[in-house]
Length: 470
Image (spheres, rainbow, N blue to C red):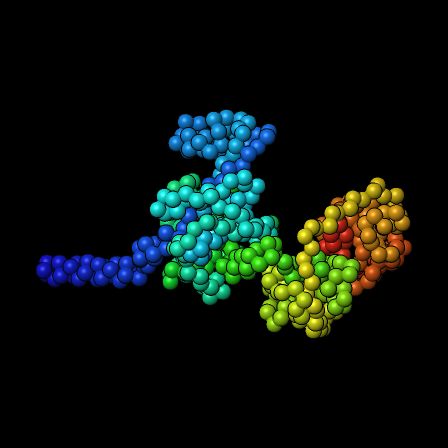
């Protein structure tokens, strides 16, 4: 009986050992890929001369006095630390060589405003780099080294990446050259508030200050992204890092090489997400697409006949799941090419051909609103409005319609997000002509149903979902 028990125990241990061995065999081995590609990854050190002001630690980072990192950062920011006034500010980043004749890709924010850029290779050589071009919107910069026969990375495809796939980063976090970290792809096509034209790759690869600009590799040893940002409340890695897809980066690089700057496709619309309440007001089964809240004058969108209230659900046959998905699609379209939009307009779909224009270099500044004249309080919504003075209408570049919100009390309008100083342009499909017309439209609003209200605010337009209680 005892022998039988020991036999069972022995069998269980053998089974567990076998399972552990099989699980271990399934984990990737990165050693060969690191050995093959490390030489093409570089450390980038920049120097910026300052004439005054106080340098600051990166946002969210606090360095306690007396720690090793306190000494480390003082080497680069000066003995005065963040409260001093050094004559030079130094920063660190990463990059990678894309051709044997010395072209290097890194982040725009790594080399921004740098007076000198030094690239250190794996063999400890240090070369001064020249900026060929830099693009803020994509956060990509292209450098050139005066050298030949350099090791270069192999390009892959971010489009073929799958969520859950293993990826690896090589860079210089905190200045430690050729540090390797690995993880998986957490999501694709991620949009960040400050970057409308980059569909980021989200990973859980450990990225820290100094990794910016370094390559993200797939298991075939191909570069699929450029590490750019982290999401953190402390300044350190918290499991969310973002990389620029290599297709986006190389399109930028090609333009920087050939013309020194980057041009992007442009529709000339302001868009927003379709919320559940707005989807209900437009008669949609589910929230999707990019809702057009403003069509800019003399833009490709205006020439194509796009209208405020249209919901763009497809771009060149690609589904537009949300408003964040549209700008990268348009931005990567060549200027002058024709594209086809599928839009939802008044409960029916419509195909609209459009010729893509060039994204302007500078955004138009928003206009401020003057103090409004007294208006009439509308009890159903809990707000008061007034007609727009002619000079204010001209200042805000508004058409001859709309009313100015004077005050907002607690109620349906406030709950919907309408605030003092907003200009209400439309209610559902009706253009608001003046205060009297607005009053009549409000009288006819249904109870218990969401209604789309278009407002202009600080130079931009946005749809809000207004719902009167039963």
